[in-house]
Image 1 (cartoon, each protein chain N blue to C red):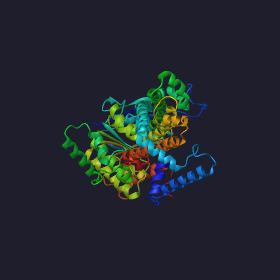
Image 2 (cartoon, rainbow over the protein chains, first blue to last red):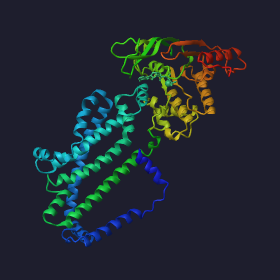
Image 3 (cartoon, each protein chain N blue to C red):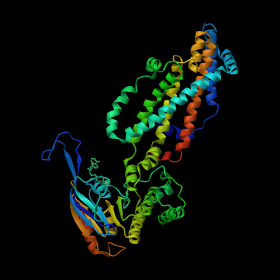
Image 4 (tube, rainbow over the protein chains, first blue to last red):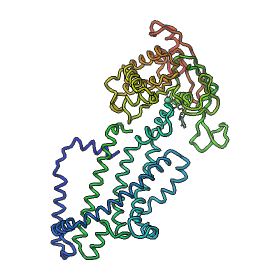
Length: 264
Length: 263
Ligand SMILES: Nc1ncnc2c1ncn2[C@@H]1O[C@H](COP(=O)(O)OP(=O)(O)OP(=O)(O)O)[C@@H](O)[C@H]1O
Ligand SMILES: [Mg+2]
């Protein structure tokens, strides 16, 4: 709700396009000053210009693209799996009080266990490669998605289900005409949040369980004592995280502008 | 079609308080009686207005007649069939907005007609219903883009589109400004005159009930019993000044509800 309020509020305020760029410029300047006057060697704390140059080199050689694609592949598969399993489970738990009281405690118990804590088990079970990373991403998105879908479904105004019964809706119609439209705004917000968590986790998972991806790039560069590559990797992670969030926000706007204003 | 028999209906809800109230027939679970042996029979095409103090169980009674909830005891029989679940033979018009907010006016009205095979006939009927409630031009609007009165009319159109035998309306005028209230009342009376559907209207406005009803039912405070059940054989349009009998009845009902009409 508060994001919607922010959205409408900001519509009435002048928003100079330059503002975010100014902040980035300040950040670059600060970085430059810190690296220059910190007393650390440029190998340990490189400034923005060498890092950007190294990033250009990595990009030109195709290494950066390869690792980025590897990370994006894992997050896509893991996230889709979480959505595919988490949404239906959330809907069932939101609709069925018996299932809810049965399974909710288990989910609430598993949810706060950080996906990072699963790394040893994931590696033992799935070995090295895409599988453990995907498994960890799946875990990081699955529980938040189940919980938020359950809440969204159970807070649907009961009048809508009475309308459905009154107009002889089939089960399938209740799903497609009541439940899915009603939970769409909340679900897209949940997608956004869990995708950003998944992006955090993918990097951590790649540092341990695989030999590719942006997380691996960072770890490998550290082992080679190339802090410029480490920082280049971090910048790409930030940019992609930003783009993913932008994508989800666009999706949310597309899916919900039509009736979101109703406040239901 | 549209004959309703409410046969000795009782309804109890579980009490949230832990301790039993003295004198409550406790069987481990403590229940609050809301409806107490309500027996009423409504004929085909009758317009029945139900009055009662706030919280006495009017909405509960309507929900039971619509089949949304089972009674704790007793039964509701519509056209010789016991009501066990909701059905599109009796359409409920909700106290709070019952339009689906993610559907346009057109799509909401279409809900009751979605099984019609013939697309053209279907579209024609939707357009016709929207015209009856004077919402032409708002077909593609979402409920939140309509005023309160327009939303009620859209819901009325959605209900009428199904052509049910029974219309059940829970405070159809609440929250409307005075003029919209009057217009909406006229709309409901006209709807009833032309379609002759059995219509149950819950209201807390005594004048609404006396102007609209073929029959007026007053419920007692919780647990609700039938306190008054009166036929209103007055010509329409009704005017209190020309119908002293109606004025007298009005005074009586006010007194019955604990209001000294003379103020
Ligand atoms: N699902 C429920 N669970 C428990 N108690 C309920 C439930 N529904 C209604 N009640 C109780 O039953 C009583 C009657 O409620 P109801 O909504 O039927 O009243 P009403 O006559 O329609 O009131 P109003 O005029 O304010 O709409 C209230 O005291 C309410 O607290
Ligand atoms: Mg009510």
